[in-house]
Length: 379
Image (cartoon, rainbow, N blue to C red; front, side, top):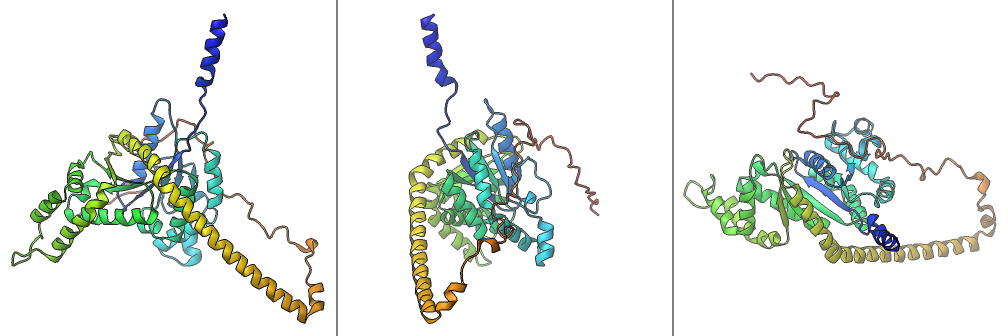
């Protein structure tokens, strides 16, 4: 009996292991039409189907989307009305999206609080960004959201690429240049995700990344490589040069191919994400902490300088007008209780509205009820 009790005691702690790792955040970025939302839906389904299931915590940051093929835990549309923003500020579509994202960012501290409350129960936090890539990657709000998340949790950027539309060397080079610029702007672990491999395998892209001579050979055989006199065009020469420049850039990148329609390749993607966690903790986190300390130092110095200037002005004012200082006293009874609404919580967490294993499979989904669309026949 004693032996049985000892065995049970030994097995007890291992039966309920404590979570010793923070969840990793995946920021999905990509050109319009690359399949970001479908990628997030399939990743959500893949994580639900694991043994044991590992449901992610999903944030939708696109205020203009009508329907997403997954159930987000936090949805920007619950906080900001995109249509009303356009009307109120007299904006166009892109300006409305950018302004809505800016307004949402003012409450992002509440979002971080909700995410941190779930940190013990989830392994992945997924951000689905707006379809217009520049709105998130080159805006102040996008930088604030990225920095805030990366300062709190291990973070990786998943750059989604439309593989069938990248078979042309010029389009491929455009995607790589954009990926390079985002990498050096975010300074976070980066994964190239070649989506839609069920339509077009991504082997050609891997070859072009591994050997610049393969890319140059493809460029030479592509239409428009030479002018009417048989000389290489300016664009052809430029892309040849850029392939040499980016050769070093490719060496530090992880690249995987996935199909959001079939689910192929998502195990490879999750393996790359876990590898990026180690890269984040080893290379990126020290730099982030150093940059944060530098910002705090600058703010402290600016605050001390401002405070010294205010106290000097106050001393001069009191010396010139002693009676005025007596009248300028704070009365707590005059404070407006409704003036400060910073504690108001208006970010909605929908985690409790759906069951822990409910998700939408876009490959089997029917038309959404709100989609009253009747496409005309061509001709």
